Image (tube, rainbow, N blue to C red; front, side, top):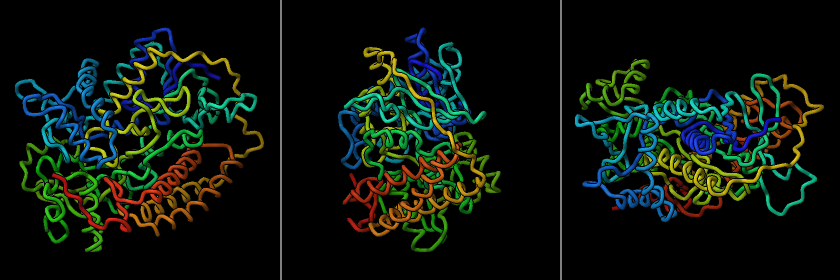
Length: 525
């Protein structure tokens, strides 16, 4: 068993920011960060877009950013939270820059501000087209300088430890005292006892297979919180990135940044028609849900597998300067951006719902916090405004840190039983997990994707019950490994998405059901 003061599950922007702040504030306390891949692998790393924050007070304002966020959220944002995050955002970005993160500047040395879909002003800061990777680099460098942070790479958190695992403890209130963790190298499962646990485990994109998310985004934190009886909300609101590179249904994780459309690229169908202006007066700069549904509509009309992003009219040298990674990756696919259109499709990108937290990141379970994409703060509402996600992660990591600084959790003295897998055997047929994972992913793409219907959702619910039963049999009979645990988590997450989709009786933001308001686009001034 390992004991720690602060356990953080996840090593993206949210988790590492919290770890660094706690470590600097409490040099005698132990901070343990658990991450199932290497310490740098997270959704943060793959974020090509930037961070939205108001720095140009001459042209922009907090109120404009607030209004843009509320419009994207389609009436379901928590206005108080929106104001809090946006007003606090510039401070958190300046703090990150002090820690060594570098962002693009103009010839005068001022921050170079970009504009993305849904934004009324230029307010998005970037580091080329690898902003997330730069933030991850700076945070890891900072974390590795602090002696009281332990980074456990290749460790997989299986379950949160609550009263459910402690039969001798009688309590009306559910509380968390750590997690059971799988060492993926040795295969051993051990206990991490913690005074305070924070889930910063990222998103759920792999539930759909076709996604911009990395392999690690299997909804583990949300599934663990769900099994621990935490409140989970708005799982039906999944943002599909309109322009993921289409590679013939291989499920690529490479996205073509929204900033490319902000730079002036056009969307065209196979006939060469620029179609976005038929759906929204903002054209390619409409919000992601609108662009995704427009692309889905064009593909359904023509029965084509993709649409195309046309950059051929742009200044190619400037394009290469702004988007070197995108340019090089397209070249590797034998596509020359100066003369070739880029094939793109919508892909699962960002979850707007998740584990419900208060303004300080606290969940409905005592001593359990959450931040980043796995959490539901109220900022995004029914649809996230572009580049507000990293902003939210930084602000809420700071909120949790400040709360814990004033309300230090008591050291837990509870005796926790070891993980019990006596009598279980190693799974011989590992292919069965891959098969069931693909079944799940196809089910979600087919019946709970960009456009849904009640009939499709009911079919998905019925089919998922069989997958759930089969997965639980595997879970109860076999020694756990990462693939089996991830499948179990994705089944839990799929259940939440489907059931909360069935409950929603109207179309809002990123949720679109053909059985309700059939108008494809809801124009906003």
